[in-house]
Each structure stands twice: as structure tokens, then as C-alpha cells.
Amino acid sequence: MNIQNNEVQHKNNLIRLLLAVLLFCSGFFSPCKAQSAIEKPLSEKATVSLLTASPGEEVYAQYGHTGIRVCDPVNNFDVVFNYGLFDFNSPNFIFRFVKGETDYMVGACSYMDFLLEYQVDNRGVTEQVLNLRPEEKEAVWEALIKNIQPENRTYRYNFFFNNCSTKPRDIIINAIGGKVNYRWDGKYKSLRDEVHHFTNNFPWTRFGIDFALGAEADDSASLKSQQFAPDLLMESFAKAVILSDTAQTRPLVLKTQYPATIDESLIEQDPWSPGPELVLWIVFLIIAVLTFLEFRKGKNYHILNILPYLAAGLLGFIIAFLTLFSEHPTTDVNYLLFWLHPIHLIYVICLIFPAFRKKWANLYLCINLPFQVFALAGSLFLPQYFHPAMYPFLLALILRSVMALLSIQKIRSHA
Image 1 (tube, rainbow, N blue to C red):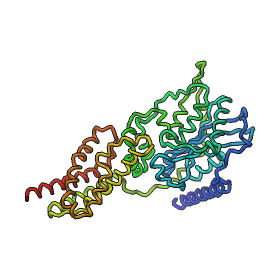
Image 2: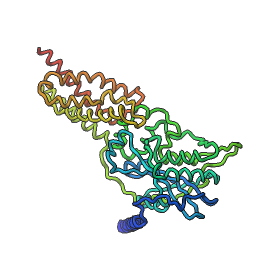
Image 3: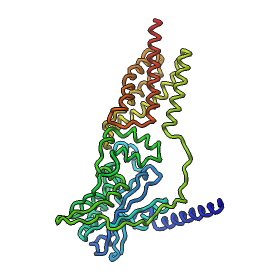
């Protein structure tokens, strides 16, 4: 039985290798441009489709992807327009992404090239052929051709409101001669709930995002906001109808087909690894035990202050930067700053100096104590989600602040 399974696995791997070779030979790695030969009016047999790729393993692929397919058998072209192109090696890419100043591009490639990419990665592709009139298809086509021009192809990317899913949506909706009624409010209460859904299998990614997203991510999210995720856009298109001026309705999607499906036998189980909750509770227990020994022996283990407050200061610096300088939405109001702030970094640096450790180090921790206690209580009523792994982290800081308070009282009692 195991031999048969291995043979199947080897055959599947061979198929993937052949697809990769074919993909390379087809010139996929040099995205093709919309040629002047296809910059002409569409024929009556042309179709416009919304393509939705299933989520992948990479961070940038965990929400899936969207493309617009324009197929015209009379004019002999089949092109997909992709608004998710970016250059990771561009100058200061990470800094610009954190600041919210990332520029993405729209590109065009053949439908088969687009499809092969996801077949090689064992990701599914759903095609929704849109129920558009000839003039609406032409309007979509003209908008795409305009966008693909060198002077128009770059746009300012926004994770929630201007991305590879919302750009195709807007082009399609704006081309329709009528009103689109989705007859649906979506499935997520907030943008954070939606992010949690797509990062459910990536606990550390989810943990990091929950630090960056502020209170606005927990506000009630409209369907339009939820459509930043390709799967949600696909589902809302499936339910939508077009209302014409004559009160007639027609479904937005004419038919749905699945040109690429996921091969379950190729899915590999990821090895178990501890999540943030387990890791941080273990760290808290270690700090608690060492703090107890410190108290019993009457010693000061400064490393117990340096490490957690260094981590808190670094996270606080990132949060403060996002709050004050980033153009990303939902980051400008973040209640985590009550206990995570960059001033902790100054405290850690000052611990190098003996005079500071002796006179001011414990006082600094005591000053932070009421803010930390408020943050702990505020996790129950403040309008911002508090990740479960943040509790042991915050409790460790509170424990060190309480220890500092006890040390000050002990010194005063012997004075």
C-alpha cells in the first residue's frame, strides 16, 4: 500500500515538474504585454470572466488572488489582466510597504500562462463568466487597455481598499449599465475577523498582524470593505444581480467553471510547531519562576527586565510608527500603545549604566504598572481585539513591575 502511494506521489511530482518546464518554456517569467494587435473592439463572441485563485502558502498569497480574463475567439486572443504585480527587490520595499507607500502594477499575460502558475502550485482557479452586454464588455476591455499603458500601469497599493481584488471589481462594476445588488451583507463582522479567517493556519502571521491592526479593524465592515479578499469577492459576485433602468434583473454571473482544481494527494502536512500562545506561556512561566527565586534570594536579575522590555520596546516602536506615519488604514488608533511603546527601548539602553539601575530602573517599572493593569482590564472593554498570546506577554511585564515595586518598598523599609 505504501509502495503504491509512493508511486502516485512520484507521478504527481513528475507532472508538476513537467508543468514547471512547460511554464518556463512558455515565457511565463517574462509577463507578456497586451499587444497592439488585440487593442481593437471585441467581437460578439467575446467573454469577460472574473478569475479567483485559491490561497497559497506564502504570506502574500494567503488571501488568494484575482484576475480578469478577456477571451475573444474571433480576434484570436485570450488574456488575463493581473493587478498583483510588484517588485520585491525594488529600493526600500519593506520600509515602503510598512509605511503604506507600496506601488503595484497591472500586467497582462495569456490565460494558459496564468492557469499554469496555479496548477504548478497546486492551487485552484474558479472562473465566473460574467453576464455582460456587448457594450459593457467593451467598457471593461477599454478600461483594461487604458490601465495597461506604461503611464497608467502603476498604482498605489492599499491592503484593504485598493488591491488586486478591489481593482478588478471596480473596473467591472463601473462598466455595468445598471446597479449591482449583491443581496448579501458578507460573512464577517469586521476586517480583523476576515483576516483571522485567512490566517487561521498561520498562527504566527495572525499574531503579528494583530499587533499591527488597530481598533478600526474591529469596526463593523461593509460588504465592499470585505471584498478585499478574492474569495469574498467571488462569493458576492455569485449572489449578485444587475438591476437595469427598466427594473429588469439579470444575474451578474452567467456560469461558473473550475479550470484548475486542488490535487489533495499533493498536499503535504506541515510539521507541528508551537504557536505563539504556547511559546509565550512557557516564557511567562520561566520569568515567573526566576522572579520568585530572585525575590527569595534578594537578588536582582536584570536580564529578566532587559529581554521582555526589549521585545516590548521593539514592538512598541513598530506600532508607534504605524500609528503616526503609516498610510495603511486601520493602524492609526492602536490601544496596545498603553503598554507597548518605544520608550521601553530607552529604558533598556539606560540599564547599561549602574547609576540608572540603582536609582531609576525600578521607578520606571512602577510608573508603567498602572498602564499595564489598565491594559489588562481594558482587554475586556476596549474596542480592540486582544490576541490570547498577548496575555502572558503582558502578565510578564506586570510581574516585573510588581517586583520593582516590592524592591522599592523593601529599600524604604530599611532606610
